Length: 556
Image (cartoon, rainbow, N blue to C red; front, side):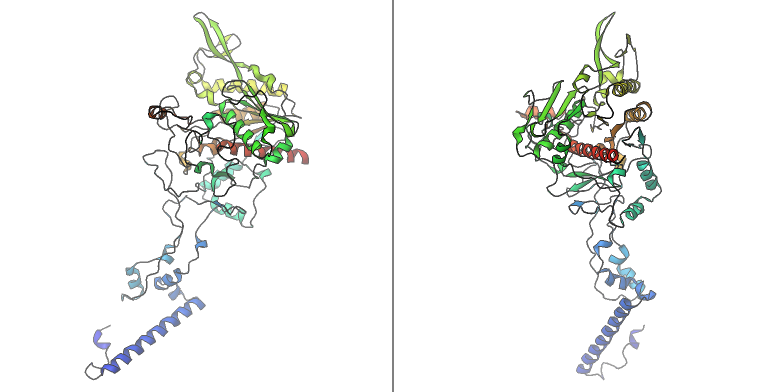
């Protein structure tokens, strides 16, 4: 509009008082008109007004933070925070409603800039950066507390879900989740399942398909650091100087259900008069010590828990048994890293070590009468001798000049499976096989400088997870197709793979000199786990698995 048309009267005719009154009146009129339009906007749906960026700005100031797209809210878990990290850089807010540019305002009003206040964007929680395994790239914010909400298994890593009534069968839970994720249906499916505030029963749920969520209350860990005297020095990271404690504040949350916490008193009551035995390598010893500490912490009379031979260190191979006097039960560990027998063979060039794939270890008499058996083997199958497989694997009087480690592992498992079927009373004894615990050596293997030092958070991006172990595929086949005895398969490989922050790394001992500390950097432990720590979750899942079996059997 031409400026000359704006003034009907000349400045010479109007007095200064009339000028002021006229401008004041015009200001009031404009304000009234503006307020009228705002009222119309709130009381009716006017497309022209409601779509204007100008009015969106004012209405945007009333945005409710609850409109941000939060996924996986778990009922009854107010202390747990979980954020969807699937969209990197998103702030979960409506950009059009929260802010717009001066150019947009001018365009919406015919090119005349209107001096309106610019609304301040409502602060919305920003999703954490995607974590990287490399230290060079993996500098993440310190306030990151949650895992990527949509971390789900790939379609080719389907898990075994025991039906506890016979054969172990492949469940389709993880396959369905993976398919929905690939098709873009995963988010809506989870919201639909939780829209009524309920979740599926853990009895029908794949409890190994889920995410780690941060817990900010006192429910984790199950026992305070430094409170249990039965943790081997190698696993006692707090006593060895580890100062960060965030890694004990993560809880495993299955995607399809909620699981109960490990009730140590109830667990002990169910163990009354029974014998639970862990059989396997030092990773199973890790889990055994964890369970002993969890159960012991629930008792007022700690003196009623003791190792029957009085030993306080458990690194040497052998048999160890903790007795819980008030419950007349024991929780034992039998060292048998391969399950099958380590032996020797006398050849033309002398005697050399072998591994008998066709014979069980000589320790079987120590656990054949157990009520609950928790087996594992896998850690020692990654060592140089077993991987190379030259003149090492023996069957009968024949030593294989060369045998691939996966074939040897399958044959060893078949020997174990036959022994279980022939020697274990399936009506009395619960048999569990804990899956492979993934390692996190960065920059090399365990014996040549591999490191996990300074890792203080889990992996947040599932793309950095390892492929499902081929040895566990071999195990699945044997459990499903070769065994008669029902076996509970604890498929902890994937859930463990997230936890690169839980290893002892350099905190395996107390170092007396600076030179020892420097030397420790090149000899880190990224296989075992700090206690308290990740094995506590394995025992929680063991407890839930036994509850599932008991309920299904009782309802049969």
